[in-house]
Image (cartoon, rainbow, N blue to C red; front, side, top):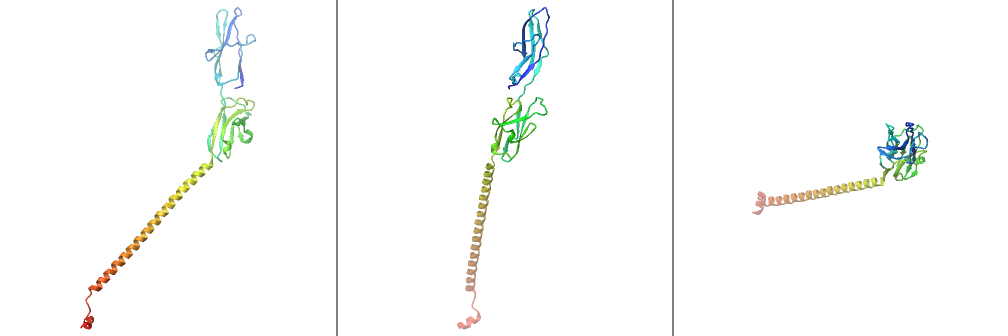
Length: 237
C-alpha cells in the first residue's frame, strides 16, 4: 500500500488509419483507462499498489477502420505483502522468541527492517539481524501484535502477528498446588500407618493378656486336680 509502479508501453498503427479507443485489460477485464498523453505512449501507472493489482495487464486499442490490436503476451505483476512469523508464538516468561519478516520480493543486501509492537517502533530496544527480531528473556511486557516494514517504505507495513507470553506465576502456583496435594497424601499415608501400628500394638497386648489369663486358669485347675502326697496323708491321720 502506498507504492506505485509504471508499466512501460508504446504502440504503432497504420498511418492511413486513426485511433478510436485505447484501453488496458487487467485479468481479462477492461479498465478503459487512457493510455497516455504522449504520442505512441501507452504507459500505465498504478498507484497505491495492493494485492488486488496482481495479475496480467494487456494493452489494446481499436482503430477508426474497426481494427483491434492487443499487446500479447501481456505483463504479469505479482504484489505480495510483507509477512511476519513468530517462532514460537506462545512463550513463557524468560524464554526466547524470534520474529521473522518475510517477502517474496527481491531486496537489496543493505535493506533495513523496522519492527513495531502495537504500532510503536521497537527496533532500537531489541536485537535485530537481517530480517529477524530477537526477543531474549521475554517478559509480559513483550506480549502484543508485531509488524515490520522496510526502511524508506514505512507506510508499507506488514500484516500483524500476535505474541503471547505466559506468566511464570501460573506455573509456580500449579507447582505449589501439586506439592501441597502430595504433602497431604503423604500425611494421610503416615496417619494410616500410625493407626495400623496402634491397632497392631493393641492386638498384640490383647493376645498377651488372653494367654496370661488362660495360663493362670490352667495352673489353678492343675493345682486342684493334683492328689495329696504321702507326707500330707500322714499329717492327716
